[in-house]
Amino acid sequence: MPPRRRLERPSAPARDTIAVAAICMAAIPLAMGLDLFPLPKPAAPGLSARKGYEARLDFAVRPRVNFGSHRKSQDRMTIVVGIPACATVANERPVHQTPARYADALIGGSGAVPLIVPPMGEGQLALLDRLDGLLVPGSPSNVHPSNYGVSVSLTPEKHDPARDSTTLPLIRAAIARGIPVLAICRGIQELNVSMGGTLLQNIHDMPGRMDHRGNGGGSLDKAYGPKHTIAAAGALARIVGASEVMVNSLHGQAIDRPGEGLVVEALAEDGTIEAVSLPTAKGFVLGLQWHPEWRWAEQPASVAIFRAFGEACRAYRQSPGKAA
Image (cartoon, rainbow, N blue to C red; front, side, top):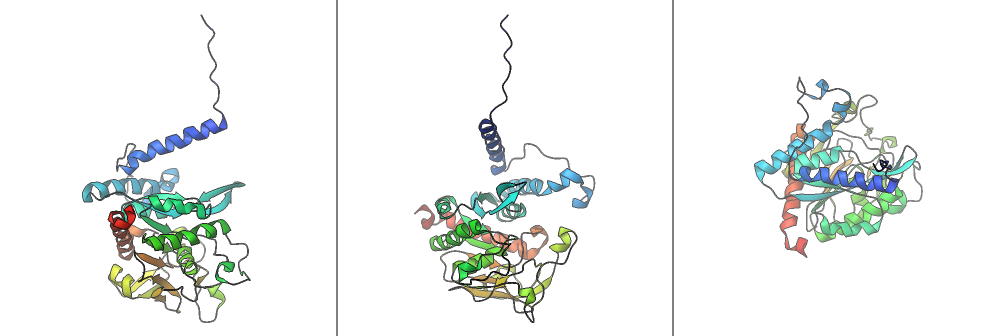
């Protein structure tokens, strides 16, 4: 009898290849709206009834179910929306990441397939050929003031130059093509800077301004809870169907001088710019200073915003400009 052959442990590159292949294979049924591995429903309704690991995976369960029902019930075409990631460090390793709730809102609210865009500079512009929309998300970091002509940073420890070098040209190129852009929190600030505008640093230290940095310590639900109302007008008011909206608030900087062509769509009670649009753009462009993606399905205004963005992405996908 020939000797039994000992199985070798795959090399690191081979293991990485296997992992990537497994992720890609798992994504195929998701994109088709299928749920091959359904989790049992909790005994009691609501996230509070779910504990530990299952509760942390709630964001992953909801989009898979929502996207499948969205596709089957409305039979809409699949759209792909890019989400630029942040460059950061986790466990002493450089990583590219963004919170999962943005993908959740895109899948459930816009019927889109989210695609993370690594912050690798202007080379990422090639991805625009494959995208139907661009969602520029929030981040703990701030746009470096050198990008809007200011030499001194009041938050020198909170910058992400890799993201700046990716998102600013990406936003400009997307707008030029007519690709729909939804910019949230840091995203609205990047949108403004990309159009030649400037930012206010540390608005909480400015006379007459409120502290927009959340609701203090505690849970995420508390931090992202309602903070103040905004007075909405123009395109935003038409989308949400209201002239006043209660929003959350988790930012330390804000728009100072709006960029070229940007129109203010909403203001906070202290005069802080909360939303802008670009009426002269070929496609949908909307910037929001708050976080509509947080528990988006529970807020009628957020539902309306992600629905409108999804519809704009579908219109772009069908347009002659997309084919060109």
